[in-house]
Amino acid sequence: MIVRNLTEARDSNRRIVSPDGNWESTRMLLKDDKMGFSFHITTIYKGADFRMHYQNHLESVYCVRGRGEVETLADGKKYPIEPGTLYILDKHDEHMLRAFEEMEMACVFNPPLNGTEVHNAEGAYELNAEAL
Image 1 (cartoon, helix red, strand yellow):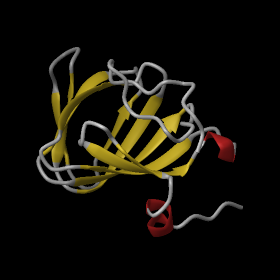
Image 2: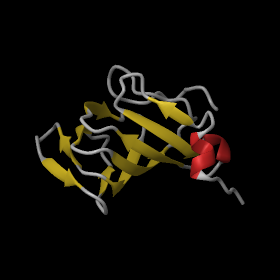
Image 3: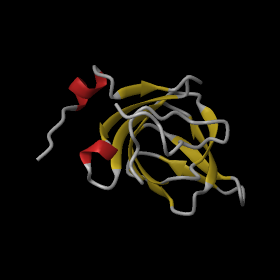
């Protein structure tokens, strides 16, 4: 059994802060845990407005706190995000994420992240990032 505490994880190298200042993510479960997915608690800072395109991963995102929107760039559709909203990037969707308030999100990635990933120039995570 694996048991981790969010407060303790945030005070460790499991807390990754994006270089662009849009988010921070505490990586609770990673590839080395051998579960087949990774699980993160991610804070999107108020006012963040940025593009992502996970070409190497599928992601599910559940909003715990805050409000914002996600826009799929292929069709320009905008979807409101509020507590209780789940959005699923099941087609490697290129998208924009906007935080009208600080948002806390529970995120699941498949394949799992190694731990140190931040978005590359295309808005994706690399598959070969360094493990924590």
